[in-house]
Image (cartoon, rainbow, N blue to C red; front, side, top):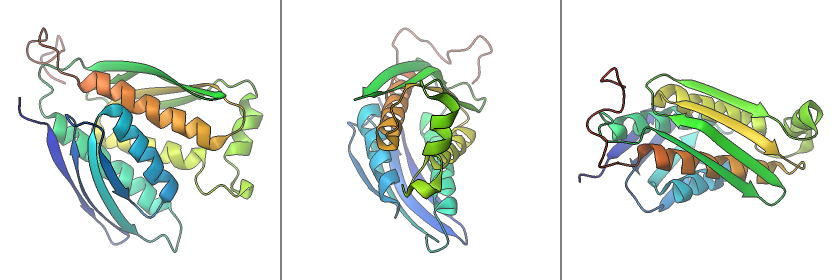
Length: 210
């Protein structure tokens, strides 16, 4: 079958993004966005989703990472939607549990390639709200926090027009491990959702359209 590939091309006064996404790849990636932690997360996303991803960005990081982070989510989401095309013959939904040492992220329902954008991140870790506030506090000195990840993922979901529920079930305060589990789980759930199923004829919806 023809590979599902889309170019990534977005340019604003703040950010220039170029690249290519192949949904039927082998997990290879070359990512250079200027935000090294996000590069690492996207490499994990591609590896575990079995997506081939080439991505470069040049943004106004001298201001902060906000514009680059948001536009990368939008650009990748648009490419994901275009690569999917009419969504014929796909499984449509996928889910995954991924541990990372003491952290456990769950993407559930999880990814539904429904054509209806919705994103939810639930924090069910033992320390609850106090832990969440601490991990999103920039005074901690960590260069990429949970709010940054939420903003990226919301942008990705909005532009790709998919439904994603993320649950962080366990966490012991290591933001790197938490986000690593999240991006791996997202990649794996989307891998299942985009997979072609020979038993699915046409679009997997009673409406006949996604």
